[in-house]
Amino acid sequence: MIRAHVLICGGTGCTSSGSKTIQKSFEDALVANGLSEEVKIVQTGCFGLCALGPVVIVHPDGTFYSRVTAEDVEEIVKEHLLKGRVVERLVYNDTGDAAHVEPEHASLNDTAFYRSQKRVALRNCGVINPENIEEYIAMDGYAALGKVLTEMTPDQVIETILASGLRGRGGAGFPTGKKWELARNLVKDADQKYVACNADEGDPGAFMDRSVLEGDPHALIEAMAIAAYAIGANRGFVYVRAEYPIAVARLEIAINQAREYGLLGKNIFGTDFDFDMELRLGAGAFVCGEETALMTSIEGRRGEPRPRPPFPAVKGLFGKPTVLNNVETYANIPQIILKGADWFRSMGTEKSAGTKVFALGGNIKNTGLVEVPMGTTLRQIVEEIGGGIPGGKKFKAAQTGGPSGGCIPAEHLDIPIDYDNLLAIGSMMGSGGLIVMDEDSCMVDIAKFFLEFTVDESCGKCTPCRVGTQRLLEMLTKITEGKATLEDLDKMEELCHYIKRNALCGLGQTAPNPVLSTLRFFRDEYVAHIVDKKCPAGVCKSLLTYSIEKDKCFGCGMCAKQCPADAITKTDYVAPGKKLPAYEIDPNKCVKCGACVGTCKFKAIIKG
Image (cartoon, rainbow, N blue to C red):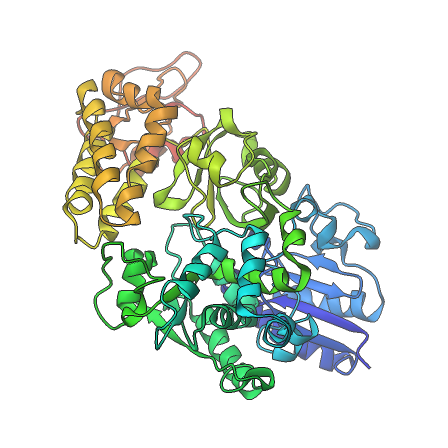
C-alpha cells in the first residue's frame, strides 16, 4: 500500500540541475530501506520556483525541499519517510535561511511565492506525471472534451469561450472566441480546416509554454480537439521549438497515449467527430513565432510572414481556414468548459479576464514561473512573489513582452498588469516574459540588447525591418560609445515610429518598443551618454574609466599582475601610513576589462 509520494521536478530547469540523478538516488535508497512498496516516486513538471531546483515535494504532508542533492536523499528517506521527521535544513522558507520550520508549515503553498498565485494554465504542472495519461484523466482530464462532444453544439462552445473573455496569451491579446467564430463562419463550405498551436516561444527569458508542454501536455491535446470541434476541423499541428527536447518527447508520448485511448483519431467518445494531430519542429527562427511565418514553415517553406488580409481564419495553413493559438491560451480552454465562463471572468479585470503566466527572471530573488490573476500589480509580483531585489539593490525597471515589449519604470510599480494598462505605458503583455532590472542596469544598453536580438532574427523580407532596425542599432551603438549627438535622439525616435507603421509583421512593428519606452522613461540616461560621455550605471564599456586612488593603495601590486594589457604600473608616490609605492592606470593602455577591480582588496580602484 502506498502511504507517501515523492514528487521530483522533471522540468528543464531541475533536469539541468541533476533531478534525474536525484530520482535514481531515491529509487536506490527506498529499496535499501525497504520502502519501495510504500513510497512512490513521481516525476512531474515544473513547480515554479526554478531558482531553488532541484525541487522535491513529499506528500501527503506537502513538505517542500529545495536545492536537493544526491547526498541529501539518504537523509530524507531515513528521517522523513522512515521516522516522519522533516529535514529542516532542506526546507525552503521566505527568508532562504535554514531556520526552524514546523512540519505543518513546510508546504510550498505556505510560501509567499505561492500565496498570491492562482494556477489555471499551470494547474497540473508539478502535480501529475505528464507521461501518464491516467493521472491527467484523474484530474478531470478529457472531461471537457467529452462534455462538448456529447452535450454541446459547436456554436455553444464558441459562445462559452466568447463569454469567458479569454484573450490570446501569445502577445496581441485578440479575443479567442472571436477568432474561433471567424474560422467557423467566414468559410462554412471549406472542404478542410485546421487548428494549430504556436509553441515556438522565442523571447529571451520566456519559458511559459515550454513548462506547460513539459508538465501537462494532455491539456493542449484536449483543448486543440475542442477547438477543432468548434470550428469544424479534423486535423491539427503543434509547431514547437526543436530546442525543447523534453517538451517534444512528452508531447509525442501524450499524442500516442491519446490515440491508444481513443481520444484522438476516429469517432472520439463514440461520436462522428474525427481529429488527429502531429508535431512540426521549428529550427529556432524567432520570426516563426509570427502566425503567418509559422504556418509557412509548417507547409515546408522558408518561415517568412505574409501580408494580412487574408487572415488565417479565412486563408491559413495550405490556404485553408485555420485557428492558431499559443500553448497557454489552449491550456485555459478545458477549465473554462468545465467550470463555465462566469468562473473564468471572476478572475482578472473587466477587459482582461482570467490569469496570466509569467516567466520571472533577471535581478530577482525568486526566479521562476508564476501565474497570477490579471490586474495583479507589478509590485506584488516583484516584491511578494519574486521576493524583491537581491543584495539590497533598488528596483529600476521591468521588461515585459521580450523584444516586442517595453520597460516599466519604478514609478509604475503599482500598475495593475493587463493588456490595456501595459499598452498605455508603451509596453505589452507579450507571451509573458518578465525580466526585472536593478539600479546597476543601463537602460540604453538594455534597449541595444533587445534590438541586437531583433536585427539578428529579422527575416529580411521587408525593408523597414531589415534596414530600419539595423539603422536603429547603429544609432544606439553610437550612443553607447559616446559618439552621438542630441539630434540623433530625435532621428532615432522618428525612425522608430516609421518602422512601427510600415513593417510587414508583428516582429518588425514592435521592434522599436524597447527603444521608445526607454527614451520615454529614461531619457536622462541617453542624455548622460551623449552630453556627459558617461554611463550612469557603469555598464557601457566605451564610456568607462578606471583609476586608482593612490591614498588608498597599499602597493601590493595584485592589480598589475591581473592586468592583461600591462596598463598598471608602480609610481614613486607612497601614501601616508603606507610602506609601498602606489600604482596607477594608464588610460591609453587600459582595455577596460575590470579585472583589477575584482582583485583589489582595498577598494582603491574606481570605475566611473
